[in-house]
Length: 253
Image (cartoon, rainbow, N blue to C red; front, side, top):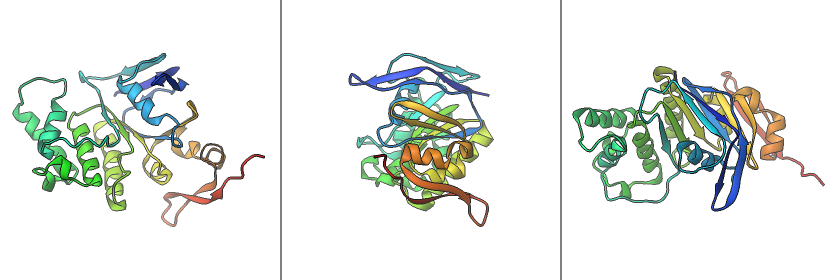
């Protein structure tokens, strides 16, 4: 099974150091990992560094990969509006770095992810005509169509209705179990992290401040120190962990 380990990873963006000395234990396939942190903590930059879009010090170690391109990356919506149908955009994403000729298996994979994400009704629509939430679902389909073993997703639910957020997070969690994928999701919704993530990585001010099982990472102390809120985690009536926020943490004098 695939695994990913970071050792003393650093990166700069436009001449400004974003993070340094980011290290993790080996993150194993079959897990959904939440990447948490306040705005500006370096989550998106960390994804770009892992994917190879940025250079810097440190080591990225991938073991157990059988695919030529084991990592796929779903960035935040960049505002681009290509004149392509949804179907064409997913097929084009799948073909990245593969070959020039499209084979029947490529069309079959596009059909599979359209069905998987319940967006077959969008197949002929122009990507530029979609709503923000629809584009996010198409972006997810583009990433999944590459059949990665490691999937990096930057805030994939930020524009989705609540029901679609639950659908997508449930699907991602299921794919880790069924296909042995390692899926790392940058998110702001700590409730989703508590409900769906097996592990959590927390970055703040360019440093990794915690990495481990989600329920051991998301604690009252961490919420106070990193997110500046007084909050606690407790089970709901059905036993699902939920975040109860009492208010903003007192600021030091």
